[in-house]
Image 1 (cartoon, rainbow, N blue to C red):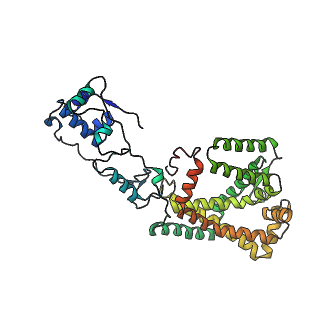
Image 2 (cartoon, helix red, strand yellow):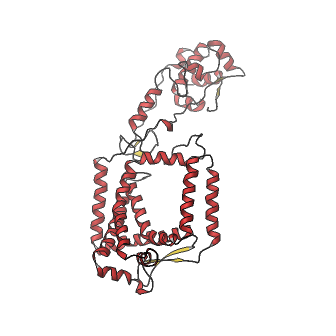
Image 3 (cartoon, rainbow, N blue to C red):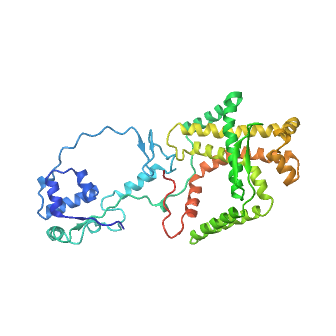
Length: 414
């Protein structure tokens, strides 16, 4: 329950007689419009004020209406009112309906009674109550800010309106056009190379190999330098995992999830599987980032400027089309497969060649086919993540909270 604030009847009456505005009164004493009205009535009943003291006074000039509309749930500004907030995914009509219900006369937030004075004022009424207020124990007016209840939110599939769909599809078409021109295609391919080497680097560290990404100034493209495996780094990874499990020990679902992650990591870590993952996740990270960018373009999640959505869509679809073209060339042309196998001057084997020859012991085509399927699935999975975002979010909330008996908060703000 919020901390109560005490109000001196004499001080409040003096402020009202001095023609202090209602907004200033509410700000000073922490009142709502309803509790301010109750306070004025109590002061009149107690003889501190007369009716003329609270007569309507001229209001200051009304400021022009804001150019932006803000979501009533997360506060994210938009250029116009929307039915479904693209930032937090909430249905605006439901929030408004809940606010209307709470504003019904006689019903106060957080109260199960129809007696407002009992909820908002100290014991006592009329002159006797005001006398107590003016003495050592003034009346109490607790603040009741509106706080949406997480458990009242029911997940629903999200939808793209026509404008949003046109924006994303237009950005995808532009990505194809830019890829068709050598110069623009080469510029954006540098972005792909950077993601690729960062993927090798991240997964190298995750399996105990201190790694450093770099551009290959001799043969082009990029390369990642892996240092000898560090037992200390591997131990640190499992210690951090253990600390996470201990931290979330009251949340059984999260503990089970972390144990499964730890078991999978251990299986890969103590077999050759970790080498396959490090090699594959160069291209795999390209698709992961592409999927994330497409999802953000579709959902508008954490978008601060309207130009971000088409930019995310452009980069995400460019990576997908770039990888699809790469995989298709390897699948359809024997000469391309030979050239790929002899890349880097024959001194360094390419990722898929190493996976196929050194670990899986198959030809190159099955590995490339699997990657081609991953490319096709990336925008599909990004769309499904957008459509069922609220369901996914509810699962994340349950896993995020350390103690399920305590409120988890809302992760969709910001």
